[in-house]
Figure 1 (cartoon, rainbow, N blue to C red):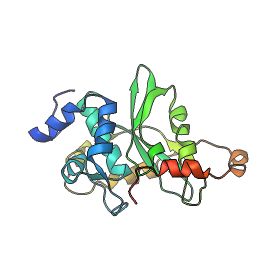
Figure 2 (figure 1 turned 135 degrees about the vertical axis):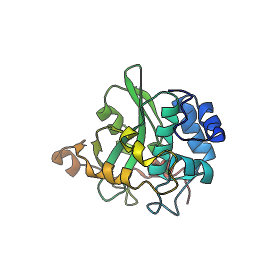
Figure 3 (figure 1 turned 90 degrees about the horizontal axis):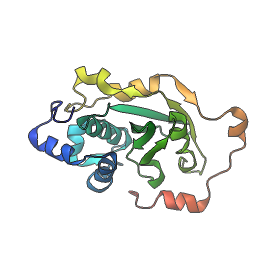
Length: 206
C-alpha cells in the first residue's frame, strides 16, 4: 500500500514516493545510481544501502526496483534470467493492464527497462535474448525462472537490512528455470554483430 513504510525512514520514503511509475524508477536507477562494477558478486545490498551508497549491480538494482514498486502498491517480484558462460541477470517485474514489464540495472544498455507490453513472462524473457551476450560475442541467455515474490523474505528485513541479503540470490539460482531454447536452436546461434556489441556498451562503466 502507498504510504506503508516497510521500515524505511522519512527521507528514504520521500525519494521512493517520488518515483511514481516504473519508468521513473528506471530513470532513477539509470541517472542517480552508479553501476557497481568493482564489487560485482562481492555485495548484495538492500534497497536502503543502494539509496545510501548510490551504487548497484543487477541484483541490487532489481531489489531496489522491487522495493520501489512495492511502495506504490505493486507486489515485489523478481525474475532470474539464466545464462551459459555468462552471469545471470535479475529483473524487477511488474504487470499493468494484463501485460508484463521490467526494471533492471545493467552495464549493458539493452538489458534494462522493458515496457509493459509482453503478454507472458516468456515473451518478456525472450525480449532480452539478442542483447544478452558475453565478451566473446556468444548469445548466452537460456532459461528464466518463475516470478519470486520477495514477501517471503520479509522476515530478513530485505528492504532495509544493513547486512548483505545473500539469501535472495541463492534462492533465485536454486529454483527451477524454464528453457527458452531447444538444443537444435542453440547449436545454430550466430555470434553478436559488432555494431550491436558496441551499442550495448554505450554509456557503460569501463
